[in-house]
Every structure is written in structure tokens, then in C-alpha cells.
Image 1: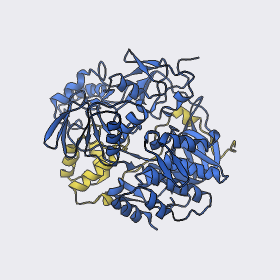
Image 2 (image 1 turned 60 degrees about the vertical axis):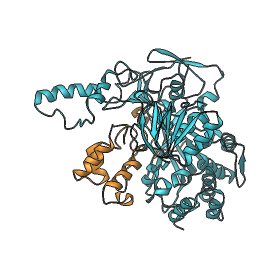
Image 3 (image 1 turned 90 degrees about the horizontal axis):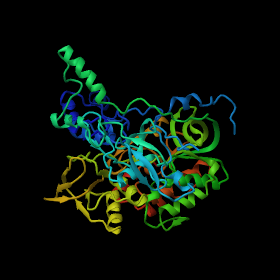
Image 4 (image 1 turned 120 degrees about the horizontal axis):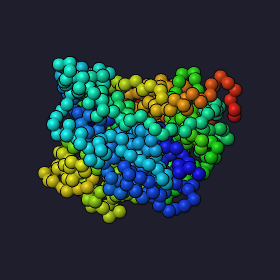
Length: 91
Length: 472
């Protein structure tokens, strides 16, 4: 098991590589690896290592996925109650 | 008073363990799990209390409906996502038990522990859900309807997550993460008479909270990690701490911080002159058959379970291909009287609902838990958002930020320190954190590289790797 969030097996990634997907972003879209609740925290490094092993790219060349804000889920209510920084600070 | 003064946060549930300390009573607290009464120790996370009570399977996987249990104990894996007081996707390992809480499994029918849908895993060795039952159309419609009910992460909330108004804060230095590096940085800033905001969701010293060896680095010394964490926290005033997490860094905009305020979760914006990232890192899977069986957990997670919460993951317990974290766990477990089997060349892990045995090194050993040790990979989310360049270093756990020994990165006013900078030991993290804090307020710490190399406990290959990243 490579990605316990989305139930992606090592074989799923290997098969995707055989189909011609050898970059991280396409692999992510084809297999759903790194797209579950953990957002790659658990599986990203292992996925890069697996791809480095099965493609002619190095881990360095494979790069990484884009880590967008927010890095943890934020309730919309809390976001709605956030203060506009353009207002005066209260401290 | 309502049964739950701190409403269960959804995924960003913050503050494991923190609430127990200021609780008035040391008595056991009681909560329900799928209708059963469970006793917990005050302050301990739900996932720990469930494991203690024998409920290692706490959820089911998305597709195959395999049983899953906690694997990371740091809120970074899907092994303990549960429903609490009507709110789905609460991280059980990061959410302290509150008396009277109503916790339920959110996947599997009728429950995560006995799930009829687990038949999927028996019927299909591998199941490609995107390309199965596509035609004919009527079959696809039935399949889609069933699949949508079976998959997913819980159902709509019936409970509410309390929120409160955010504030805009200005400070000299924002420190993200309160492990050894973050605490040392925050202390250095405060000692220099400058204003710091320390953000951590736990406020128990990160990896110090389960570190059982004496620590002595420079002017920092303590009998063990928890005492050092206490000493360091004492030097950062309460009003300078934010229980929460930095959730976003933006170019030329204030940082976004999700904070657990007494009235509920709030999003604060923080304008800081300098930001020190000390956000640690993540374990991950070791690629071995059976690695998602309940009772398989990361070595750091096992140290947290045993060292911080006093819970034996299993006895006997197997440690598979141990490195730094795995050996530290094996030492602690042996000291606590557990039978530890170390396998250097594990082949597979056996067990359906719980680890039963491990096979490797030409033997088969019956065990109750299996500890894997993939090492800790630096957390890169915030660094990447800040524009810090990263490079791959096998020896340091994967992608690490380019930086100098004192934490400066190519991005002005963004510093990194500790595990998130690739440093694998508490000692090295303390030195670098302190240096980053001093630098952040304009002091000139001297000879940091030499001090980390002398006191950091690095191996030769780690030292060489870190030198190449230091970009001096």
C-alpha cells in the first residue's frame, strides 16, 4: 500500500508508469496518490522514490507537487470571521 | 456547562494533550465509541484511548474497505479519521478526549470494525474504480449509485464546529512549530527583548515530548525532553503563544494562522518581520506487503504512543529495518519490558484485522504490532509557499530547503530550522533553532555549522549531506 488515503497500491503506480506517465503531476491525476485527506504528507516521499526507481528520472528531477494554502482544512465560518489585514491591527 | 467546552474541531483539530493539563480532575473521563462506553485518561487523544481499549481499527479505507488504525500519531495519515459529536473527519490522534464525547466510526457498515463492504477487498485483488463497470450504461448507473454510498470520508455534519472572529496581529518574529527548534528560536527572540509569536497545535515541545534521554547542548540542559520543553515554554510568555497552525504563507501578505481560541477556531492574520519555519516532518509507508494492517505504525508514532502516552503498541512487537527512530523505539520498548523482535530484512506482515506476525530474516515471528521506520521527511508546504528552493537529499529524508547553518534561506526574512531543514536530531535542532531566533533579531551567532557538527549527533553521511545543503 503506497497511499492509504486513496487506496493506491505500488502496482497502480507501476502500471501508470508502463502506460507512459512518468512525472509526478500526471501520476497524481491518474492514480489519485497524494490527493486524499493527508495531501501527500504520508505518501509523497515514497511516491517520488518509487518513480525514481521506475523511470529514468532522478528524485531531484521529479520535483514535487504544489502545496497550496491552506495546509490544513479551515472551516469556512472561521474564514468568514477572519479580519481584513487592511483594517487597523488590534495590537 | 455543556459536555464539551472545546467543540470538536474538524480535520484541524488542535491541541492534543494540552487540555488535560489544566483540567481540574485526574479522574478518568468517559466517552462513547460506536455506542460503547470507553474510559480514557485525562488529556489523552481519542485514538490513544481507543487503542488502549482494544479498538485498533478505527476507520476503513476508501476503496477496498480495509481496516485501518493509527499509523503516524501526528495527524498526518488517514488512520484515525472519525466522527465526533456529529462532525466528520476529526483526527482522533490530535483530539483530546472530553468527558461525554460521542465518537463514531465514519466509514464501514455497520461500523469500521465489522464492515460488510470489506468483501470488496476479497473479491478484487486490485480494483480500478475509474475503469470498471463503465458500460453498459444501466450497469454504470447502478455501480455509480452504489460506489458513491460506499466510498468517501464520512457523511454530512450534524454537529457544528465553533468558530470565533480572527484578529490581525503584528509581531517581530513568527515561529511556526513548537518542537525543539521552534522553542529554542522563540526563546532566543524573547530573550533579546523582541516580540515573538509561537504557533503550535500541541504546545508540548514536539519531539521533546517523547524524548527520554538527557539533553545537553550549549546553555540548554535537562534530564529529558519533556522537562526541557517545560523549561523552554516557561521562557515564552503565554500571551506570545498561539495554539494552532500556520496554514498559509503568501508573498507580501500576512501569514494565515488557524488558532484554537477558547470560543472556537479562528483565522488570524500575522504580519511578521521574520518567519522561522520549524514545522518538523512526516513519516510514511515502508513498502512491504501488509503495511496498512492495523497495528503497523511508524517508529516515531510508536515512540509517541509509548513514550508520551504510556501505551504499549503491542507485546511482543516487531521493529522492521530500524534506523534512528526505530532504534530509539526499540531501546525504549526494551527498557519498558516489552519483547522486541528486530527484523533487518522484512518480507511481509501478516494479519487481517490486526497484525499477527511478521516474516523476514528467514523466520516468522508472532507479534501484536509492527513498527516501520522510513525516517522523517521534512515538511515542505510552508517553505515552498514562501518560495524557498528545495533539493533532494536521500540521507536527510527527501526534499530539504537550501539554507545556511543558522537557518537563513535564499528568501529574505524566511528561516528554517530543525527537522524541516533536514536535521535528524533534537540536539542539532536546538542549536539551529536558537541560531535562527538570534539571527532573526539581528544578532550574529557564531560558528553554528561547527557547533551543529560537534553537538548535533550527526552521522558522517548526514553531516556531508547537510553540508551540501547549507549553501555556505
